[in-house]
Image (cartoon, rainbow, N blue to C red; front, side, top):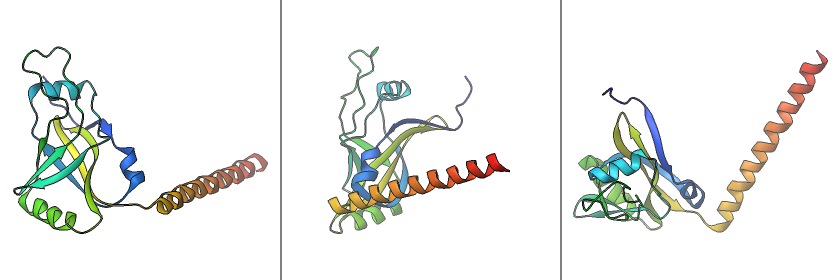
Length: 161
């Protein structure tokens, strides 16, 4: 069988980018069972309620929903079990120190296969206030309107030249 190349996205946490200010991102491996990998290869997973905690100098991923594999038997996994993250010791220590600061948390952003191996992108994040969320939406909307106006002017110039 040919070895997989590239990045195949399984799940993305768009709500995290809306609710949090992303300060730093990390790519981690996951400790998974066979049925979890098969279920993920079918593109089935949800990061919606996921979060990362540090316990006894190890990083653990909680509340990520990977549904049971449909052809699995008694060996099937629990859908919301905690999963160990594979990271370098320096990264774990750095994340643990920063996460203990007030208002900081660690959230999953994306779950994907990279060259055939399951990876997760996690982020050190700080919660946004409601007015920050509105400001971010307003900035996106202004940027979108500016781009539309510029492209309309360019279309008009091309038509007259």
